[in-house]
Image (tube, rainbow, N blue to C red; front, side):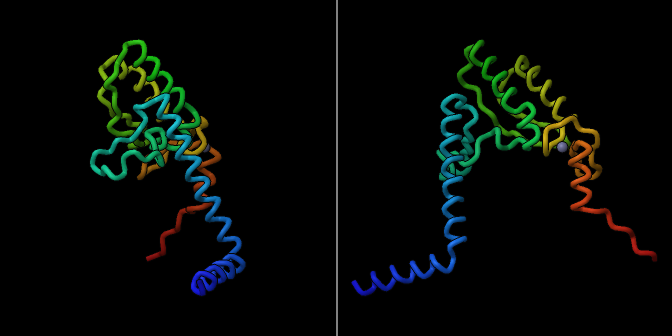
Length: 174
Ligand SMILES: [Zn+2]
């Protein structure tokens, strides 16, 4: 009883001292579960967006991330959901039940969408893969530049932001 009072009091003091942290943690966990539930609902509509890793069975049945989240934000905004709807339409039309995605990622500045679909669906994917190469990965506007080294398409605004944050260094004179 004394312990309970003591720890209860300590928690209270903790709360008073770290009010901001307390609320931040609460908001973070609310965000987490909102996202989790949102993804669960999306997977009811599009079950093939669920990441069934297989490799990490204990991570399965979690909805913290679904396949569309593996796409850079700009692309997701610009055409991500349009692509999902196009694929869904195709799957329904052809009554394909065993469709599954192996990987979705950005590679050399282009969208890569690996799945078990036949060539007909490839046409849909190719359309968006081509579009991705010309779309800013950050905001989704038309890309005007492409980075060298790590290849990624950017629009004028986001490129300037990026250069501000990561200015190029001058070589020291030898
Ligand atoms: Zn941009």
